[in-house]
Image 1 (spheres, helix red, strand yellow):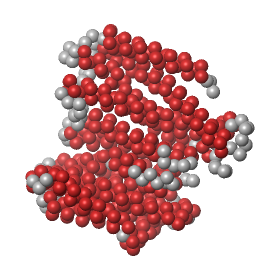
Image 2 (image 1 turned 45 degrees about the horizontal axis):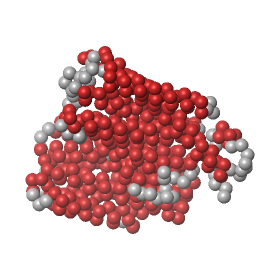
Image 3 (image 1 turned 90 degrees about the horizontal axis):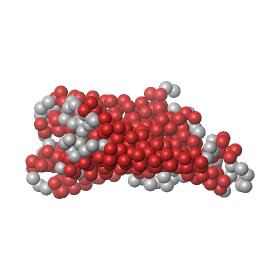
Image 4 (image 1 turned 135 degrees about the vertical axis):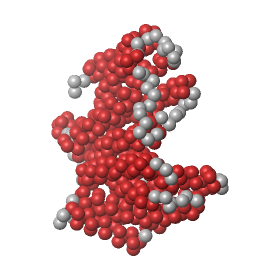
Length: 247
Length: 226
């Protein structure tokens, strides 16, 4: 419990970095040669999409860690990361649609990356739904971990199938950002956005993890045969998830 | 007892239940028929559109009705504490997964054979050009589907029984099967060209099958451990 202080500091850092990102993308970055002001959407769309993959990667790693160590902590990490990931995946899709309308002339196109992201969102909405199913915390953690692992392993195959579906053996789609030609200021704005979103992710994770710890503690206290005794011992043993209901 | 033998016994047990009761087929087959009729009605009597849409409709009917088969495969375990008995028996958990998958795959293949004939009759889908590729697509796709469904079918056995979670999870995971199956099917039925393309799709199905059989064998035990 290094505590609330660290969380507050982190939240302020996240807020400041988001503000810096807003300044970079709205003021410092020049308008794009072909897209004009619309390019500014990139500075939140790309970081949101990056967070989606980061968050689901964390779910994958934490799920494996949970199944191998059986520490409840890892289940809380996976749950927190999945929730944040679903939020940012949805954000990335909505922002992408808003960007697509003026640039491509349509809110949605069956581009491989868009389609994969939509399926990714559905898989992790399913993950969150599975978390609500079981009545025992230990079983919930195990089921969720299996979904977290298998779901992530599925993503490359989905991606491949959708790329082929558009046209067999066609190369990557039209890249909106050809990296070598991007101007340094735009690259700086983009990197600031990525950094700001990543810090925000960590901050949201710490908050969600605390909520998870409190939930587990409340459950442990309600179920504990030693009501009124410190529950920290149980928590540190990582046994909370396994406490059986004793009436 | 080896894993193969245990798997065989599990599959035989499930198939015997199905043959005697026809619980899954009794629900899945009429459902598939209903879907096909509904597809036909919603896309109108125009022959050309129906023929073009037929491969997709075929696979959609198979995917959706397979959900019923998986539900049944695990519901029978939920009754009379059968699953607890299975867990207490000295059987490898991987064999439970593989056996269930084999049993469901065999059931689905029967279902698919009937659905293919129905689609050929109702939508005028011609099957003649490359029957081997068509059969390969269905066998490979069904193996992958059987692996995903057998892995997550346990969710149907949850105490809260919110069964709607199962299709919500499995259908997005099965996207590659839908895409590859439909593409391979339409390549050999509608366009009759590009058999090289069709074999690429079969390769994708093989990759999907291997990933899900491996993943299922490795992690299935964690779903049952109580």
